[in-house]
Image 1 (cartoon, rainbow, N blue to C red):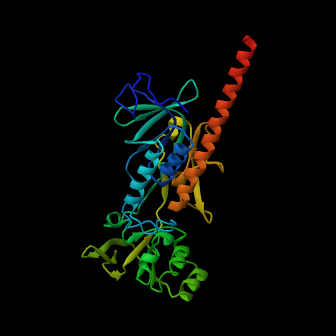
Image 2 (image 1 turned 45 degrees about the horizontal axis):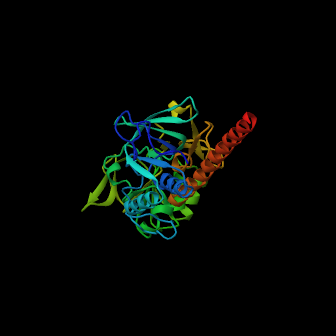
Image 3 (image 1 turned 135 degrees about the vertical axis):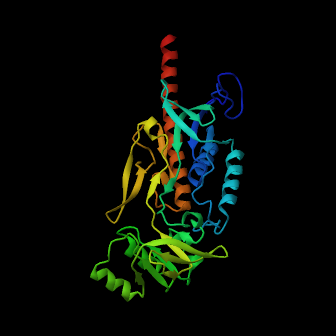
Length: 340
């Protein structure tokens, strides 16, 4: 385990500029993936620091879902519990944004935070999540995660049997409308900027009782802080209680260029829907010493999947560090034997 005292002999977390403490692993991102990784590393007796910018993607949601044992828990509650568990095993968490990263001559890394603090690490785990690139519809962003939704598995049960609108933004609009029909018999597809369905798609929509509305959606209609409908460009307001948006996603990768990583395109059914960072089955990237976990590499993962990826990455990092330490120990033993 790396000694957790900086070059000035000061113990504790990242200090002021000039105090660069070294950790076995620095985890960038304090969501489910990052905290699960840090917890696993702590239980493996590794020193780990989580750098948390405090921008969880699911912050607007009332609760988390499909997370066995935590169903319906508020997102902030899960994170608070995660913080406590990480610290219980010696892990550290600091608020801030990692703005740059550089490889050191010894193979480790130096990470600089937005307030000027810097830390060093033998390995990096990037769990920075992604950004939803929402369409420009008046009022839409303010209701994101509340009654403007994206994932039927995350939110479908909560709006079951309500009037659900699907905002068409691309070729997957018909597929999306058909999916949401599982949760409500009252589904309307607003074509908005999506392509016109072909004859077969219209037949499929009609067979499932899904209405199709032409025109561009200009704004949302809200009454008493609840979505009541969408306003089209001609002034017509169509009632709905929830609006589904398939927004493109972009990996949060502020450190990519520094580390020599590149984004790769993300497709669903052959349709481009955003980008991500590529990784192998152990979550390792093409850059030695750098792992990724969560939505930054798997944008379609739900929360429990991101948490599992954090555990998987941490286990691989621990194995990698163990191998490095063993190689060094063997070399030291041979050097001692040769000196005798």
